[in-house]
Image 1: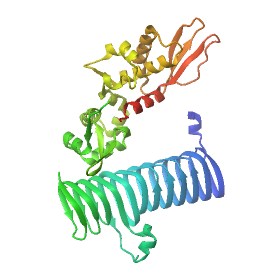
Image 2 (image 1 turned 135 degrees about the vertical axis):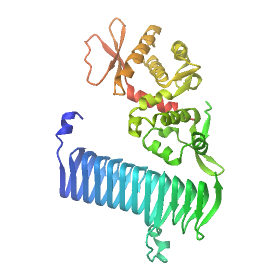
Image 3 (image 1 turned 60 degrees about the horizontal axis):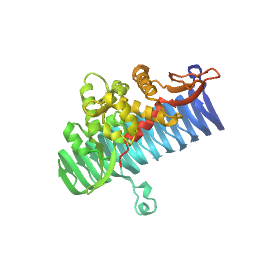
Image 4 (image 1 turned 90 degrees about the vertical axis):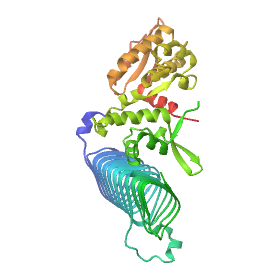
Length: 228
Length: 211
């Protein structure tokens, strides 16, 4: 793409139902239902409604209020999701804020990740600062970062529904969690490694390796504790 | 080719760094993805690194991080690679054929090791040797080395293309092309063309695969 096109990019607006090609735009606005056939590079992308992506997104800011499905990697400084996003790919950015549901087949990388909801990430969640407010099942292969905080939000009644819809059980599941300061609640993890590790209520952890301090809530089980 | 590996735990201990730092550098691509080698151990899965490479790289990051911000460090990745020293026997036969190694590597060796870019130039030479009909003559090879050594650092990571032109008199000329099409006269044919970026990618992936 040459530089001339880069400065004269137009906007892409879809109101109602529409299809568009991928490419370079300045602002992308979707109000309604859109299919975008190809990767998009733009300054801001806003989806209100439903969009289907057949390519990645490279943007300064990505706002999803609604549903986005598709395949491709997302790279954006700020990613704000209110709703549901399902992408076959990875997400990389500076700030990622998720209020809702996110499913990724790749990794998720950012400086700050703030979650209120649930997610399913097949790869690594890597961020400097991770804050997870559990509203649904959060499942990720590995977590790594500087500070990792997982909190149970106010419990609502689930009862026997947990057996039928396991997705709504607010719990974090991960094979490996590594960080400097790790604070966990309602977590099911294989190995947790950190400098200071605080295990709150409702956790089941296979092995904890810590350096300076370890606190374990009496309602949680930790099979092995190792100080390094 | 057996590589000495170091576990993540030992690495943190040895270099005096934290998980947070390691993950941040990974995010910033200061530590390439290929260096993270997963192996199962009796405590579950653990991550290992090629020891020589990672210790050199982290030492480099630590020594530069006081003067430069992380983002500036990322921009210096080309210089960062200068911290990588590759043992000649590591690439001989596996990445670069023995004939090419014997011809050109000897004068570049420093304590039995090669700098990253030197090893890469050998890789390019090896490729050309295989692609060009009749292979490269010794003279062409040393001219190629001179060209790469002299010009690639000047390009500062900008994408470029290595093109070999062949005249009807079977004489070959090598050119580094930075963007734009090339229009040779009719009697001249393009004998080979190689994107340096793609070659570097291929070289890295070959270098960092461990059996």
